Image (cartoon, rainbow, N blue to C red):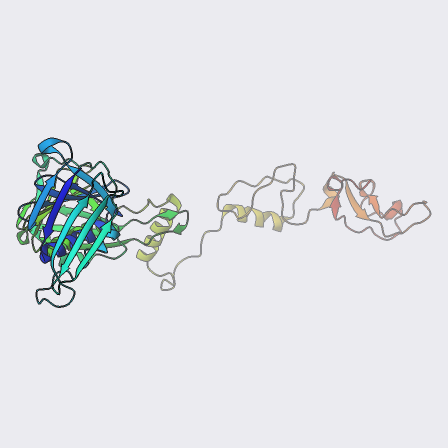
Length: 434
């Protein structure tokens, strides 16, 4: 059976409300670890990238404090876990009112019901109001094993400290949709807090619009500033905002300790028997380069277009240069024009491959000229229209082999008959008609 009893002043109860609000931004549950001389609230986010531990001194923070663990001797402890919203429903925001108006309390008494003669274990909170009204809350808790994150400050060679109120003014400039915070020191005596969000592209679709906000602060405005120049350390903007806002409620200074990117960073602050430590996972750049993601490399064809546009912008306008000569005609078009004008199809030549030409040259077995071909000198058989309509042959063929006569001869070899119509199609192109 564990014994845990403590009493809170209205001001101390209000501070517990503030720390529960802060822890609620990290996790839905809060763990309570009670030892003989202190009480610790801890929270670990779902991705296990942020750990918070808020320690309340048994003699300084509480009016009365008594903890006797059921086992473990002098170093024993009692641990439990509860929903953060359940505790927030008890420790409300207006527990402390210096003017003593309605809603304020006179004291808060907390005890743990963990006895063998009781059927259920409860975390009991009694709010004793100024008017003599007592509000009692019995919360269900769960026994858990609480673990703590270890952080070696001796290895944290980079550190800085600033008043939380001043830091709160700076974070108001950060965009509401920014996700990451890059902290680095420049060579000009300034520290830069740059919040940004990454642009995620899925093909041609951009899922997030990039947003960057940078706040430069003179290092002289810090209470302490000892950071390697050019070293980028990246953390979560959401976590940093929650820490700064809570530190401002205590009217104290915020201290940061870290060594290098990918190693943990710890924020520490506290006052009046309350010590807050937040250990965060980090990323960043070892070489002092820009931490925010760089744009995707431009494709070669896009780069060439960009270069051509830049050259076009630098060159004078063609409309202003009236003495500019006409463009040079491609060789393929000049050769084609000469062939069309000469009409010498008897010795067709293959056109040379020209990369500037709009046409694709054909092979020697196919047509090599774009003008109509003189079929009198073409030895390949072709089909022509038979206009004689001679029914005496016993068939009604409408196509006749034109390879046995020429244009000077009449159809069916009769010179006096109607001249045959010029062939329109080759025999090799007619397939499947017979």
